[in-house]
Length: 178
Image (cartoon, rainbow, N blue to C red; front, side, top):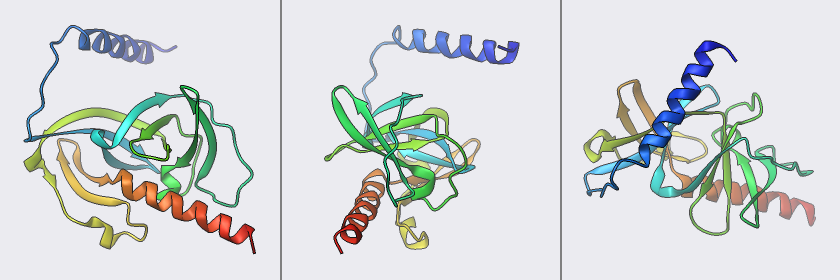
């Protein structure tokens, strides 16, 4: 490991350990918790409230499928969950193996795979520009933008992304029955 990587790993460990020493915070209605992520070489954000878990390097078992976005299946506490590539769902080319999986809240279970976790951030609600960015995107998975120091990021709407994944999977099932 290079010194730079070792230093970052040590800093991440220290931050993680320190997070248990910090008193539990209560959130007010004026704050929004987000994960800043990288997908398909672009910057996005996910609402933490729309997720139920974040997992690095989780094995995914591939499936034979014509749905390019469906990476396969992964196990989470005894439940087998379909894993979709977020880059493909957002219309980006699938470059390499994603490192991160995020479980979507709701039912049925679904996980989204992405390449880069930049950071967790808590912003004031005023920093989130709501609205239907979906109208300007062909797949309808984006809802709003967030202003962050590193630049504005579109917010991926997890329920809309789940709906797209189900439409794609249903389309494949319909084609298989004809």
